[in-house]
Length: 199
Image (cartoon, rainbow, N blue to C red):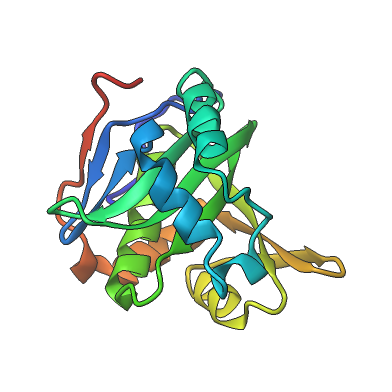
C-alpha cells in the first residue's frame, strides 16, 4: 500500500477488470479463454485439489466459464505470471459487498517460488484497495491447508468464524498496510496498472 486511497467518503467501490497489474518479478494478467488448459491442470493437481472447490477436468467447460467471465462485471480473475509470461497461478477478486470483496481462487502451481505467492497477494490487495477503493477483504481457507492459513494470517487475516471444513477470515486496510511495509522489497513504486482494453 502506498498511502490512503484517494476515494471520497461514501464512494461505493466497483469491481473492474485490469489487463495487467505489474510488480517486480511477477504480474497479474486478466484471464482469458486461452488460459483454460493451464487453469484446469492447476486446479486438478493431485495435491492442490484437496484444498479447493472441485473443478471439471474438461478444458472445454473451463473455456466456456472464461467466456462467461469476460462479460461478468462482478469479478476480476487473474493469471499470476512471471514478467516473461510464464504462468504460475491464479487469484480472483469477486463478490463485492459494500466496501469489502472476496479474495479467492488463489492457487500457485507446484514449485512456485515463495516470492511469487507474496508478490501476487500484494498486487491483488494493491489493485483492490488502492485502485478500486475497497477497504476490507473476506476469504476462507481449508483447515487442513495449514501453510496457506498461516501465510494469510501473516498478511493480517483475522479469523472470524469456522465450519467443519474451513476457517473464515477478514482483513482491513490497516492490517494490509502493515503487510505492505513488511514486504516493501517485493514491489516497485509505483505498481503499474493497465486497464485498457479491459475495464
